[in-house]
Amino acid sequence: MATMSSIEWTEATWNPVTGCTKISAGCKNCYAATMAKRLHAMGNIRYKNGFNVTLHHDLLNLPLKWKTPRRIFVNSMSDLFHKDVPLEFIQTVFATMENAHWHTFQILTKRSDRLLELSNQLRWPENVWQGVSVEDSRVVNRIDDLRHVPAQIRFLSVEPLIGPIGDMDLRGIHWVIVGGESGPHARPMDPEWVRTIRDQCINENVAFFFKQWGGVQKHRTGRELDGRTWDEYPEKSNEILLRA
Image (cartoon, rainbow, N blue to C red; front, side, top):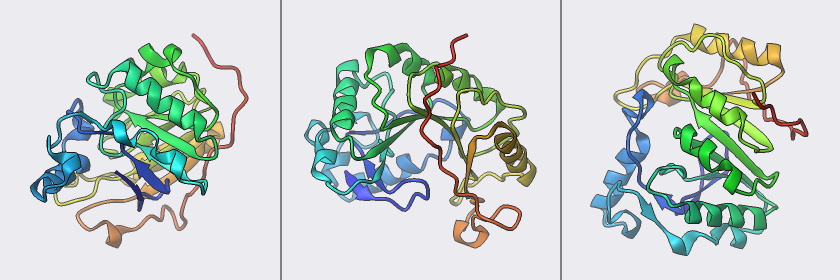
């Protein structure tokens, strides 16, 4: 449950939790659900419960065994802040990340309300980056929740971008990743939606990463936006946390 990753903005994945449930439009064509179904059919022991939320206690300390520093996407096959993941388990995941201080851990959630609710009960070492997924204008409230989480780096995964987002409040946000949906049922992404986000990032001095155009065959559409690739990463922030 820990592998080198082909995801453009990370280097490895670590899945102490697998399984999830769909909560918004961005989940419609969930790649993790499709992959879990395939792995279950192959008899993979980690997916004996299919895509039901499953805790893997034996994987909690795995990053401590990796001696070479790497960027690690936490729970690429789940959501750490799902309601079925107990606070105590989340705290243990955070303890491992703090102990494995030579790595950088990247967490994404669509459950920003629970993230905010639990954030003061977690320790936030500087090597833990916290993000939220924002697929269209209907879920921009997740950005407001994230803004008040005491992570050193706070980022947005605007993927799959399935609709225009418009003006975003990027105060306290350090990184924005944008990508189109891929796979046989991929929904289209308008280039102007991407440009609008990129231009806001430039104006607000926020690092911008363009992951992919996506589509049925994403290798054909590539990663270039207006003649170049955008592979910016955030710098560490010592700012005082904004509080409204």
